[in-house]
Image 1 (cartoon, rainbow, N blue to C red):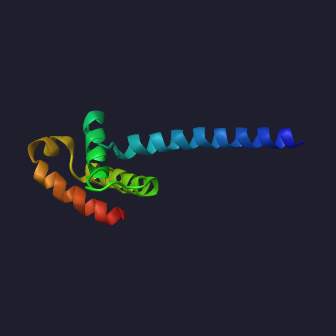
Image 2: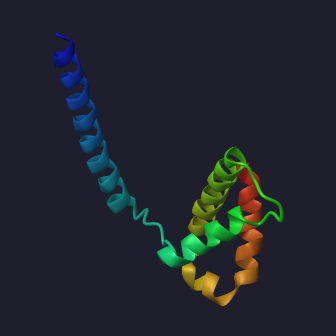
Image 3: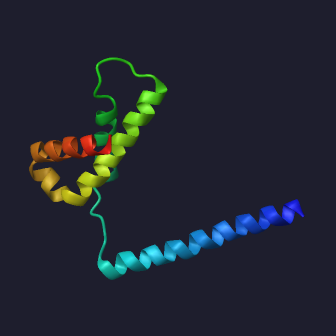
Length: 105
């Protein structure tokens, strides 16, 4: 009986995830909620620079927390400041990114 419950739970989660994914895709298409993401190399560089901005070594938990803040800040910045703007004015990007990182803390 335990195996059947586990299998049913796994199957339920899989179906729920699949159905939810389709609904989210439909909403994105319906409301044009596309996020204009930066190229992956640029995103990676931004996150790496953000995490390593301290001059002293950090322990793993601080790195993990810093990484979460950096990812959150980049996500919010990309919604407000598209890649074309980033290419044209990196100083404005930095200002927005720093504000977003304070929001994410």
